[in-house]
Structure formats: structure tokens, C-alpha cells
Amino acid sequence: MGDVREFDVVIWGASGFTGRLVAEYYLAQYGASGELRWAMAGRNEAKLKAVQKEIGAEGVPLILADSHDRASLDAMVARTRTILTTVGPYAQYGDELLAACVAGRAHYCDLSGEPNWMRRTIDQHHEAARDNGVCIVHCCGFDSIPSDMGVYYLQQQAKAKKGEFCKHIKYRLIGMSGGFSGGTLASLDGTMAEAKADPDVRRMLLHPYGLNPRDAMDGPDGRDQQSVVYDEDAGQWTSPFIMALINTRVVRRSNALADFAYGKDFRYDESVLTGDGIAGRAKGMAAALSVGVLMLDPKKSLLRRTIDKFLPDPGEGPSREKREAGFFAIRLIGLFADGTKMEAKVKGDRDPGYGSTSKMLGESAVCLALDGDKLPGPCGVLTPSTAMGEALLERLQQNAGLRFELG
Ligand SMILES: NC(=O)c1ccc[n+]([C@@H]2O[C@H](COP(=O)([O-])OP(=O)(O)OC[C@H]3O[C@@H](n4cnc5c(N)ncnc54)[C@H](OP(=O)(O)O)[C@@H]3O)[C@@H](O)[C@H]2O)c1
Image (cartoon, rainbow, N blue to C red; front, side):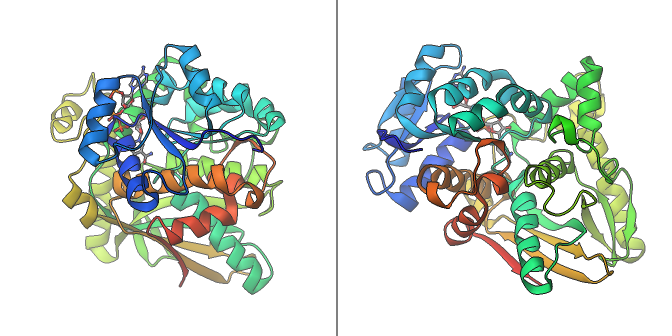
């Protein structure tokens, strides 16, 4: 983006739980008036001012913009190189902002975990965004940066060390701690409700290549894992992973956007490691059951309503202590055509849903705003790895507490 704008990044949604965490991260990492020129935005001035005061960001400019007021969105977009948005659910609040970014030539990143909405934004905006030199990047949090950038990392290592890409990569969650995000649950519920009401949405949601370009929606992968399965390569039992629904589609879109660099026969799947022996299998069955409960309709299921009482609402999340004590660890098992393996680990130093997510999203926006000459290009509705590649990998490791390592 060659034009000179007042800001590098505007955080829209800075009065919310996650937006505030990104603002706190920028304050700590970049300062209020340092090299990064950033602003906090939202619809409610009093709330924004209160957050500004609470986190000690008095020197940071404020911008008012409401999702129902397109003129206010256009005016905000015109002032910045990149918009970072935490105003969700995105299917509800995101359309006008996204259109404003494409028209107003500002890059965009979000935390959408809403595949049906992302399908719509791809269909509506991919070509115009590409023509306008605008990168639209969904899924810049725990879903789906560790998956997408982890596969990117392992494939670069495979190419460098063995001279070829892995034909199959398995994402196996070793563990995570820090609690579920209320916002993510709200988005999941919204996605499920849309899928129930509309068979096309349901088909898209179940389609393993549902986010690929329309003319490249086939490949060897089938449905996400539904039951407890023993994985010989991992040497453990595995259970379904709720975020596979979005992460696997993002990774497959990355391969398709890169002209199938890993091959049209590249396979990718995700699940959770639950240990070996009878105990590992039993743990897997319990985990599978809890995923099933989360998929239940919160309006119709008594069990889900009862469990919801113990889960966070949108806008709620773990305390600072819980975030700082949190972590995630993922094992990526890469299989080559000759049957040999290469493994990598992806680790985060905060809870996945908020502490790590806010740093991943924050660094994605800075990368889009400041690393222009290092971005792979061309633009469009992209994925984290196809939009930012090596530049993001570097930032995540240097600043965001993520580790990508072989072994
Ligand atoms: N993928 C991940 O890993 C992950 C993790 C965390 C969150 N998320 C997603 O991030 C989003 C935000 O989550 P959160 O927990 O931070 O939610 P939140 O605390 O409820 O914050 C929502 C923000 O949106 C603003 N907003 C609502 N309606 C608006 C409108 N009409 N115009 C402008 N701003 C409006 C709110 O402003 P007011 O303060 O004025 O109400 C608030 O700043 C959700 O979609 C969630 O799914 C994803």
C-alpha cells in the first residue's frame, strides 16, 4: 500500500474484551506514540475513553465508527493502512467494514471463525480486493494461525532439508490451557444456527474444501474426524478437534491459492492427542463427548443450556492470571511420499483464545501495514500464510511468544 495515511493500524472493537487486549499488547510492545502509528476505534466514545484510561493509553487517538453507519466506516478506513477488527460475530457486523476496506484500499484482518461468512466474503470480494491491492485476512487468531503457519513452517523445512514437500500433515493437539472464549462459542452457535436453517450453508460447512476457489473444491480429504481413532504415526489415541472445522479449510485454501504448491493430492487433518492404552482411549471418548455437547443447539438442548452456565458469555474471558499461566502445544506430523516422517511443534506462551490470539492478531495487522515489500502477494481474500508468509513467521516468533521448531 503506497499511499501515506495517518495510521498504520486501527483497532476497531477496542472497547471489547479482545480488542482491549490487542491495545494493551500494542502499548507494551510499541508504545503509544512510537514507530507504530495506531488508534483505537469503536462505536461508543465513553466506553473507548474508559478503556483508554484503564490501560493507560491516553496518548492513543480514538475514532468513532458504527457498523450500521457506512460513512463512519469509510472515514475510518481512509485514515489507515490496515484495519484490525474484533467486532463480531462477523456475519452480523462485518459486511460493511469489509466492503469499505476493499473500496478504500486498506488491508484487513480479523478473528473470524465463521466459515459460512468467509465463503461469502471470498465470493464477493476476492477479485476486487486483488485488483485494488488489498489483503483481506480472516482467522488471525488461535484459529487458524498455528495450523496455517505451522504447515507453512513444516513444508519450508521439508523442502529445505529433504527437497520435497510432505504429502500429508497431521495436526495433533498435545494440550492447551486457559479456557474457551465466549466470543468463539457465540460465533460457533451462530454458524450452527445458519447451517440448520439453510441446506446450502450446511453443505458448505461439511465440505472439506469449502473455502477453496470455486473451481478447485476437490481433493483427497474427507470429513473431519468424528470419533476416537488410534493414530499409529502419533502412537496415541486421538479425539475430534472442534476447530478442525475451520482450520483444515484454511490450510487447504492456502494450498489452493499457492497453485497447489504441496500438490493436488496433499492431505491435512486435525485431532487431539489423548494418550495411549485404555486410559488414552477413555480420555478420547470423554473428549469426543464434550465436542458433541458443544455442537448441540443451545436453544433446544437442556444439557447444553446447563453446561453454558459454566461457559463464558461473549465479552467475557479468562483473567490476566489465567491468560498468563495458559499455553498451547501442537505436534505436526509430516509424511513424505516414501513413507518417511518429519515432525514439528508449535507452541504458544499464553492461553490460546485471548492471550496468544491478541498477540497473533496484533502482529498480523502490523505485518500487513509495515512489511509490504516482504509480503508474498498478490492480494485478495487470503489466508495468514498466503498473505504474509515468512514475514509473519518472523514476527510471531520475535514478538508474539510463538515457537515453531522441528522435532
Ligand atoms: N478465533 C479466536 O481465536 C477468537 C478469540 C476471541 C474472540 N474471537 C472473536 O472476536 C470477536 C470479539 O470477541 P470479544 O470476546 O472481544 O467480544 P466483545 O467483548 O463482545 O467485543 C465486541 C466489540 O464489538 C463492538 N461492537 C458491537 N456492535 C458494534 C457495532 N454495531 N458497531 C461497532 N462496534 C460494535 C463492541 O462495542 P461496545 O463496547 O460499544 O459494545 C465491542 O467493542 C468475536 O466474533 C469472537 O468470536 C475469536
